[in-house]
Length: 421
Image (tube, rainbow, N blue to C red; front, side, top):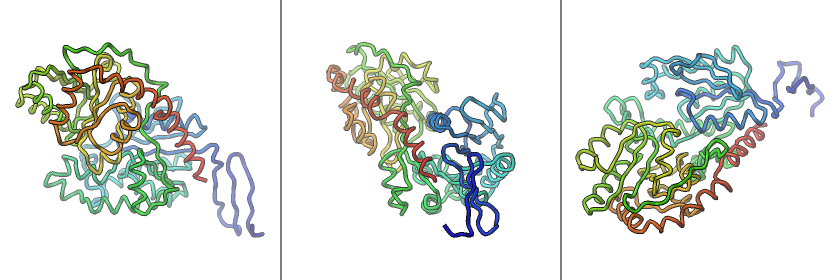
């Protein structure tokens, strides 16, 4: 080291003094203060909750800024984190679709971040998903903190597929070309980038991001918080299928309904339990009526897990029928690991991560996403020969215990923070 530079220590901070100028702070990484930015209400969010728990247990102090939730306080201190909630108008929320063309939404979050840094000193800004990446990078530049970009989704493709961006106004406000460029730029500027599957890491690295900067922290199951399901004996009289999750076009529920109609026409008795809510729910209900399969489908709406344990217990198979796209080929639903741990055999569409995992773990079978006839044929085979499902039951659960669990992924997240220095 040059003679005109010196280090001295105080508490958990090391002060680097150079030429008598203002000190540069370098945090002892055993204890960092982390500000997470999340542009929706919290809780619930299983992934974010798991991340907070792992970081807090590793000795870090976590704060999270999110939207206001009815009945919840503006400031809430829990055992694991501090939650800062902010009200948002309908106009401001809807303005997020045009975030790259108009500054309203960015300005809303800039004000939040400025107020938080005025009250607290943070070492890391951890941004959940791509939209707020610019705010995270600006905080890095302004306050000298590290910037972690946690990409749950392939955001440019997700927006391209979304219903609200395919309206006339949505197309004017949201440009896919801009989002692609924005993602490339923000991934390059982040200190660390988190993705949820290996396929997403390959995609991000193809943007020119160094592989050493990108970590895979998947949406795996925290088995400590998930009680084992007592599976019931398979029934041959009525074959039961289960889907739990969001109901949007890209989830592919429409193809399941068509498969049910095919099976009904052949006199095969199947029943589909559909649990969830979303922008495509009304379309699904119309399709159920049009195909006259209401006696073979129950739409339960949104239900907490504790309300649907019986559905997990009685399901012959669980379905993940996502439409294959650049989005679904680069993410993974948390439910796949729930199904595996609950010992429910799966039928999944041919999205890359889904096929990779069910083939590797031998926990289910796959079909081409846009072929309801192929899906119907698989269901018919299992309905006629339910013993064929036995091969898939135990192996999925064991794969979660051995590999696809949050203890493994939480350790990866903690290691990423250790490397930030």
